[in-house]
Length: 453
Image 1: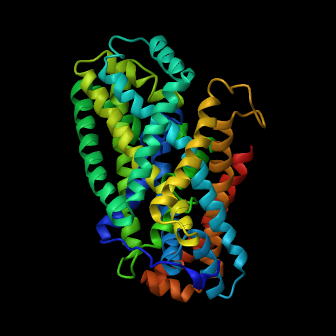
Image 2 (image 1 turned 60 degrees about the vertical axis):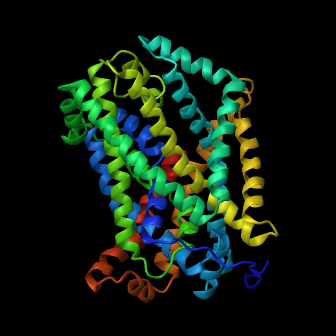
Image 3 (image 1 turned 90 degrees about the horizontal axis):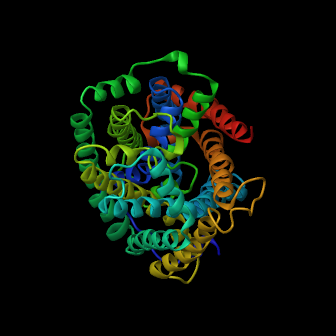
């Protein structure tokens, strides 16, 4: 369908605050609360954290700004935004492949992200039933193993989580995405502060041990693996390379200052990640558990702490509600690029587009569920379906999309127009040009190469 045949006017965010909370909600997710703490634990704590913070502002922020800027220019779904902006800049329509890979990436990610969101939702019920009371590491490991082998339970919670995601997205940009994040993001903030406060109270001196672990630099612990991990996590933490921020940018008016808004979103994202560490590590240290427990930190290690501390029942419930909310604010953003594409380029209305795309993603999620049990032996490139989709998206598709975005924005677009749009002085634009033209492309290529090693 040609650009001129778009069938409906494009939605807009009702306010800068609504857009900022939606963008922050997309960035704040399982990556902050699940992945960041265990990566910090595995990579030695403070040196990794400080390197991650540096990369968030040096690399994540400029890519975020460019995705919004391109999306705002195009005012369409990521695929046709890239095509239209490329044509307007005198470039090939083939740049639409940046949008295609991004939208496909978010589509595939949601299929297994919803499964993990279902885990968090189920653990609310487990915590409420007192399943973690007095447990040992062996017991929590068995609880998680039994859960992964129970197809019906996994399917039920995957379905519940996917339904909640689709329900919010179907309501539209203002009534769904924006209103949902206006409710959930403040709720997330309150829950997180309660969790940190309780962790400080319950762990006593171990709270300061956690602070030292996260903030007192131990540069001897920093190696090439930790640096690359920090670089990769900074890139993926902001939902970059998935078509999400380009789609969100397409609903954005010209009155929003992209740089200051991006700075606020990055700060919110970083604060949530760091506070999550302060909610988790004091409990880990106080109970003599391992900070470097890996991906099992949330679902295997933390329940031990909840089950063996005063007030752990309430704290466990609150923590997994917090984790579910965070997963939901990201899942609605993962669904949006596909829905926006179908709504604009097919006869479907928004609700129909949401239902159709959600059913397909939900069905693909079933394959991910079965990869933990009945299809555990079904492997491609020595990976089950869940791990293959994770690898394909995070190690290949997202870096490729991010690299395409930064090259297009820094080399293919009129730089004078970008400078004016960002309202940068000549000296600051010189720094911007060095980062976007040279530093960031090298960093993203490094992530891409590292993913194949």
